[in-house]
Length: 132
Length: 257
Image (cartoon, rainbow over all chains, first blue to last red; front, top):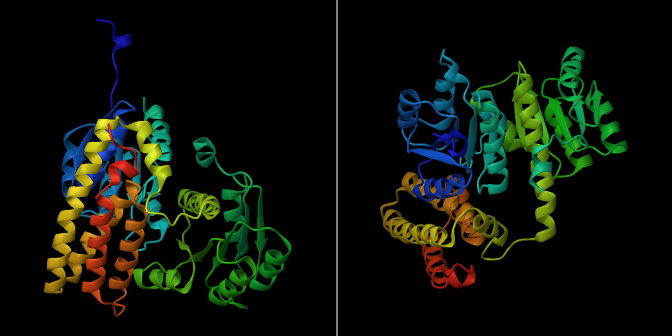
């Protein structure tokens, strides 16, 4: 088998409760050879994160059951190598939180909605390329 | 075009006002290789002198200072630099109440002590990027129904049929959500109303429905701050505006296959 021509998909876990934005990100990131796994609440993000290996997490802040900041802190508190996965935070910042809190929680980047898609793609490239 | 937003902005000029010499040196050590200049001041008076004589892109102000505290210092520096320049508080208070207090007072953000280098770097960079974006937005002055820049960006990443499908999904979902809003309004359920407004805002903004997003943002903030508003009327307005704009969005946005 010729592995050179095989497309290597990057595995991205997207935590976002809006299905419109989930689908939007799916379409856009497919362009970058990303395979998206969707999670619609903070608990399911953690479940999916535990049961599989990913290259990147895109995390909305405003999630049901467990918010994106708590989910990020839980991921970072892990003892295995997985705990260092790159996390890009996204949010409409409904609660008007200081941006420093997202970084304190352990996110590598933060983007305010509406998303700048060019910048998002750049960030996805930046973190997934480094990962390989 | 996208590269420069990601590259560290080496032209930034930062003002740090902190009475503690170790803190000042610490902040300078973390930031000095990333930005053109890091000015240090040991009190508000020195800081103000620098703010008047130098071009400053961002200011960091310690809250607990003896001669002039961080709040008074904020007011003076804000006056000198104007409302566009980000001013961040540095503080040992970290409970959510005092945190909200800083933001409500007029600081753009705060950085908690003990300062972590990554948090400092990332937060400063975020606000400098924000400043650059605002500058370019001002030139464009978007008050139109659509933000065509977002839509053009999307067209580069998604196939026309996929994009049309996405927009259709958004339109159908928003129609349903508008119906829910009308119902919730009669039940006076503000929590659920806020959560729906939040979803519409995010979706509309992400798909380039600039004005819809803007109107929803305004209502969201008024409901949250419990400003006396005629909720029924405003929700009806949003529903009317949406159905109006949804009647020919495929033509307006050039989405037709």
